[in-house]
Length: 161
Image 1 (spheres, rainbow, N blue to C red):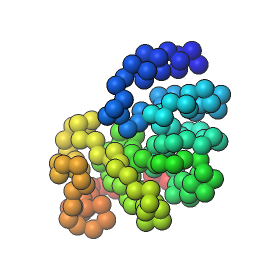
Image 2: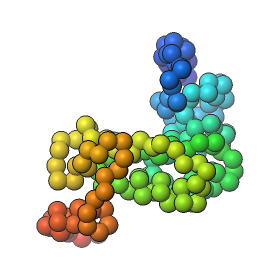
Image 3: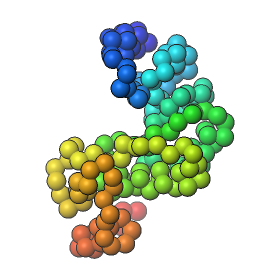
Image 4: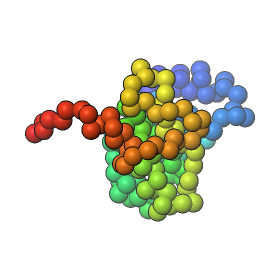
């Protein structure tokens, strides 16, 4: 808890906020800590492994670890005002999966549509599944499904279990 207070004082309180949308909380969710820190409107909660029981302004949702149903339950319980979709510095196929998840949610809740953080190009070495750079929009991929038909069809697949 003391590290959390230091982090807020060192970074958030000294940061010029006029161009700041939110800062994702860098600690696991604990009700006691969140109650003390939720007064700062720039903090966004990532519910990585825990369950948020208190309402938050911004919820960061990493869809590869959760389901649409879980998010809709949080929405109906009033546990967030905004939701930002992203991934966990994932492989490009998971980045596409996160985009698909966001699209599913926005189809149900179009009023909550936001700019998301779904593409990370500089984290992995370039390979056949690296998404082409089309600026701030997802690329239009040819083929079916995720658009890597030619590459995925040449891989050898084994049943794991």
